[in-house]
Length: 285
Image (cartoon, rainbow, N blue to C red; front, top):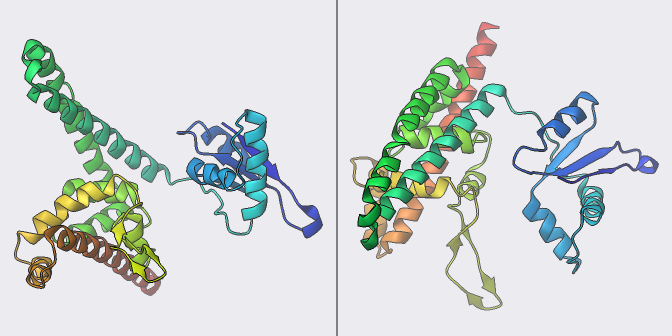
């Protein structure tokens, strides 16, 4: 883990500590900085790497990385978001959902191995491994449901999400854990964060097909399943999907458009639910 501090008293700015995200190992440092009232920024390693690469530099040692983090903090001090501790309930909820994703991925891997032609020689071993994740997954599902029921904020947002066609219990928990910003974004930001925003690729007179890339990788596959479910139902999203097909849009393009609609509707409904709650609180106050 690397950390650098930037201080520019000649311009009247305070100290800013910058560290890279290292899978949670930086939490102790960030907690200490919070106690000392020192503003901190937890940097995305990919962005720091791109920043260093923009100068044509390749050398990498701990002292070199620390110096580059210092430069990164100095150049972006005005716009870099300051780190804030996560709500304990939200943090625990996100950990439960992340663990569930890991166990489901492990189960899928074992199922795929079972289908391999040569796996019949180790079928008993794979079958035993397949049974292992089931009970922990069921336990995590129960814990996730309990956290939602006990947290007014999670329950409010979950109720808003369930009102969107195609969104089921698994996607509800995934969105609450991976996209806690829902409700505070505009529709373009929500689509981009979910990896459903079409990005232009134009140069001069050439205009290529726009592609949807980026975003938080866990969301897009789940949204695809939600879009399939919504398009098979009797709702306004299914009507929109069929309308796109009737205009000769490829199914893949039409499904992506429905994915984008689902996440933007979810964002709007959470926003409306939170606003309504705030208005009710103000009236009673």
